[in-house]
Length: 440
Image (cartoon, rainbow, N blue to C red; front, side):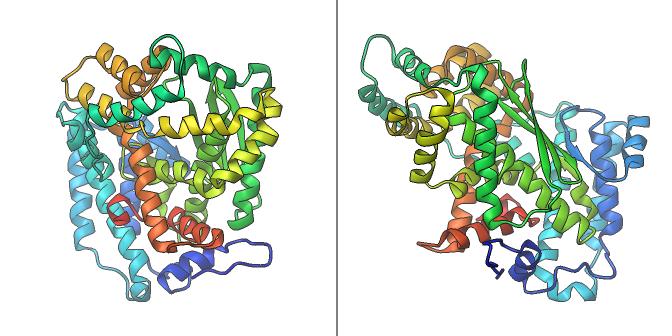
């Protein structure tokens, strides 16, 4: 597929080409270019009705200015989306692209799914109500499995035995975690070291543009714990929310998820290999409420596992991050054993969102559910409900996305794959138009 040079880099231009068996050079004629331009302008116009909708844009600045100059009615935008869908269905591919059929087929399917999600979002903005599962299917091309209280109770019982003492399980768990909070005065130093390690591991296997960079800011009063604002030109702004205590495990989690090999690398590779090298202008814009987000969040979360094996992460944190944070490294293994159990409760968050958005529980009951079954302390549970209010069924993209990406990469890499092979498949996914239904 791709090649690994003596430095261990995967040459991504060759890699993406290798996946489909052709040169990565753009064809001389792009029959989808007019449709792609209309799509970008449509996304920017929808963004005038929802401030969260356009997550990143680095196309022609005059297109953004045109969108901002007039707030087009949503019914008109829906009609425009329908017209673009019809044009897309009737547009063939250039003969020059015939040998590039797989990648071009993925590109067409990407536009089909993204346009469908735009129309669903417009319907929601105009008052259409979907169930949680209907919404996630329409926006993210996926539906999360349903779990019962009894499934979570079995995990809670295991945790109960690991955390003896007085009080409820959530009270004991909250007390236990206080020993692993990064002191605010040490946060930036710990986070910067985590970023360095994540970047080092990523650049060992993935060739990135020399000018790629990101900056870090610490912010407050947000519904999320971290956010990557991609700026274009291979640059990102990463914000870390310090409203609540930040535990030692979050340093690597955030550094990988928001940076390397997560959102920053994902956006850099899309800009490099699809937007710049091929001229596929639709990748100059990222609509947040779209199937692209399941791939973005899923690869960002699975990327932690790609960058660090379980033992590699444990030794790095025990020997480097714990001392930097002034924490007892001798407790690192015990801590991660407890976290592994808690991780099995991740789908409890989906259930809280499903019931809340379906109207079977109110916001207080949703927060209580998160406390009971996801072991969120009350302030974090309340913050998570704020997130659900703002982003709704987006929550599936983190856990379901990670599971789907893991299954896809492991199936492509093969059982017992070397780290190089696993990185190769992971990086190819980051650089492709493949979307959730294409992971199965």
